[in-house]
Image (cartoon, rainbow, N blue to C red; front, side, top):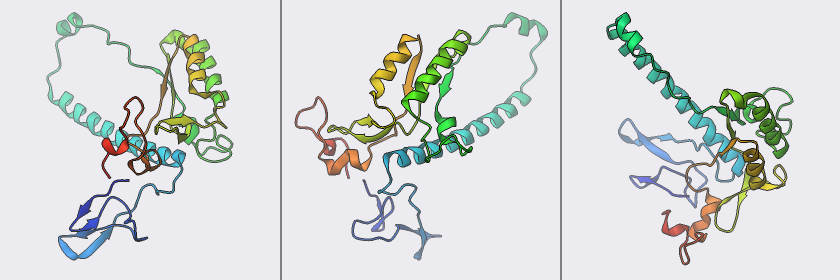
Length: 222
């Protein structure tokens, strides 16, 4: 995992020879330092890492939407209202947005019984196929044609650092689910975390598929 330094201090991860968290100067005084907590431990599982990153991105996305909505309301209030004739001459329907279903709400909920063995335990092959049946049978005719598998479907990497499906929860693999979903006229989406997990990077020794002689060290610097 990469490290960044300010004034000789590691600010992006724990030092290799230290169990202490990284620090930064506070209020411009080098003698005073602030602790910077790590969002995800290097010992976290791939599911825990993906769930944490996904939750943070959800929070930032929601905050941005609220800010944009407030700004739009201010601009709309300052603009002059169009005349009735102008409104009637520009009545054009908007393009249909992307619509579908995502597993996130069910796999991330704390509602009793939904995730009986921990976070994302609801997320299984059987449940995804069940949702595909419901989507194609009840909602596809209304424009809902995307089925999205969110974080938690993978628990490891292949020899090229590519995420692979958890064999316990997805015994037939993602290709099987994709074929099932496509056969029903639906589109399949799947979540991937940004960047490389430490296990996929493997100290820069992981080979790059289709690029003989190249490893992760050639595309990501420590």
